[in-house]
Length: 368
Image (cartoon, rainbow, N blue to C red):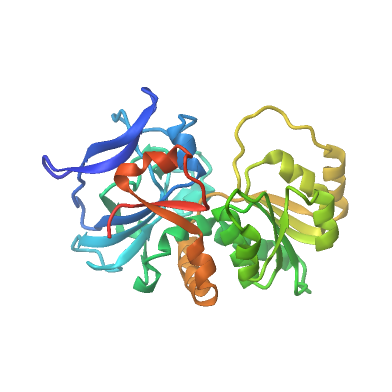
């Protein structure tokens, strides 16, 4: 850390059950492959809200607090001598998860900590590593992803898009089992939040006939937004799951992005033959949910269905997300930009973190 230099950061004290803006030591470059970033934007997601509600979140060893924030965009302000992929002035998005130290974990040894076997990985802003909701960050070059300057105002959406990038990349591998690969496959996205809407954009980009099924928050027009990038929208308030299935027809892919297990398993019986169900949400522990396990198991066998979950992402997924954000911005600039509801100064971060503000994606604007 730089001697006696403090900066502002948003941190949670789990033991004291409090969070807020604090003074935090400004980091300094300490190795030949490190990069210092001035943070520009940090997105707020459900994970951050759960951390400041003390549901989870683990500070680094020896620290009473955890600096939060994992969806981010920064500007390079300093590079160490051996850094070659970025230079001062570049924009970059850091990844989140760091590999475990277990020698037998072949996933982490292959730089695929998103598939970590041991579960002993760490994560910036979530688990044992300080996050990005602060003024400056130092990170190893290998965990940074350069971003074109043209994406400055939307690049904070890269991290949540990586969830869809990884999930749909796995979907493509799985569906190679179908050598005919039907065109105009039908996809249903559960949830109209940032992860769901970005996933829907990705599915539309990949050629899927895509329908978003979601409740509509007050003072928003999700139907208009979804239609603007070529997908369909069905209101969960007025359309039942049976209505959804009737409208869509045989569902080839369900992309779950709502974190509600009861809804997900209610939709599962409507998954079509050879279909794939992708889980991305992590529901809270709210007690058992009654489901028809016989139907789910029977359909999985007789209809050749597959269900999988996807978490975090590798640098490959980040690179794909950066490329696709560029495509979204070219094709649907207004829709993409409208996902960011409001930018808040660091000093006011408590309001959106506490869930007191609506909208799709609230962002902490740390720097200009």
